[in-house]
Length: 367
View 1 (cartoon, helix red, strand yellow):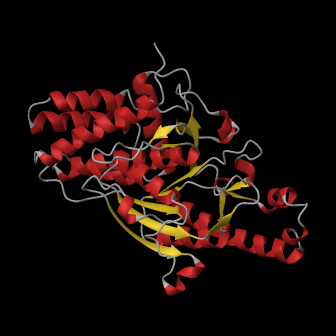
View 2: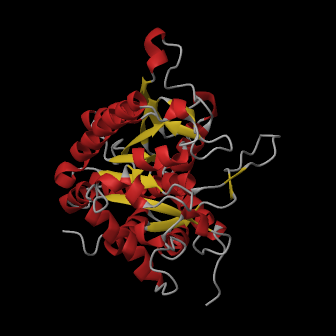
View 3: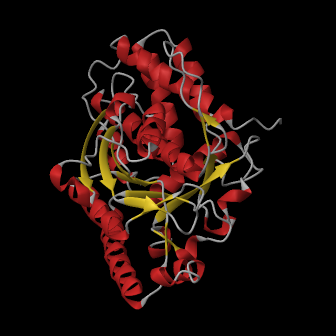
């Protein structure tokens, strides 16, 4: 079997998105309530005018930047554009998403350099707590925060950054972050997804949020052009899955004269994973709203569990019998096939039957 390029992943999901949108447009899901998967996007805010809603996606938000006291740094303005990119990657896969945009304080990174930014641990802790309070089904974190020991070893040449007061402040802020992560994963009531550091010096043991709850957080790495692991994501032992994150083109805008922009990094993979996870939940909600049975609503709730979402992602792998790498998620199998079947079906009953088959495949092992 010929190995597909990574862009086959995006293309398959866009075809499925189109098939499902056409069902809505033709009122074949007319009984579907406006139930949306709620995704908390913890990042540097989003620029609302650049957010692709696909006519369905909605967003609200809050800012935990210290400068927001005077409303000068609100959630609807992205500090560096990163949050906007992540939001568009999520809605690209699931245009019915309800985004809870939670903006955090960031500053230039002295660890990674090259224009990278570092999230404030205290601000990130506040953001995670807010996501829990707001009842998010999924918390998407396309960033990492290094532990104090590693950070200080990198900055050892700069006395101003390693004095005792600075170290104690960092440690106290990280304790707040650790506590917030512990509360978020408690009871396995919501799905946490984070990214790899894209730094070969770093692994899951010295980066938050993953290091605080490695058995309860999905950590995403990126694939290269041929759906292979990108070595830049670091050690595969701490990566749960690999999704596209190498030269991922932004979605096409029919009336835009601007050139297509390409994005790299496991942060992109994380946003795509959040979109995929929320889309699977949304398909379950659709079937429940169409009176297909209460079990679909129960399945949507069960998918908030880390273990159950892993089962769903693994089912994608089994469907395609992808034996090259079990950590690759070959969506071009089930979503590609079902998209074609949805387009060929001529009435709502047949289309809903196809949707049932997809959900049955993904949720086979979920109780």
